[in-house]
Image 1 (spheres, one colour):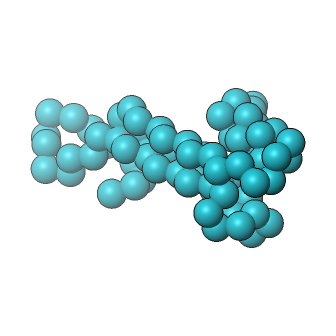
Image 2: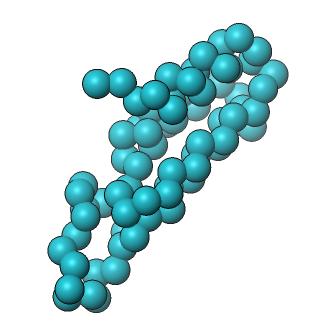
Length: 74
C-alpha cells in the first residue's frame, strides 16, 4: 500500500528542496503511518521543510465509542 499524501510530499520536496510542505490529517484515526514516514523524512530534510499534524477523535471517557483503530495518539 502507498500513502499518497506522503508520496506527494516527497515528490514535491525532491523537485524543489526549498519548498515547505504541510500535511494535516483530520479524521477519527490517528495518522500513525504518516507520522512515521514524516519522522523518517525529517532525518534527511531541514526541519522547516515538512510539517505534520494529526487531528483525530479520542475520548477515553466516552463509553459509547470503542477506541478507533489504531487506538493510538492519545
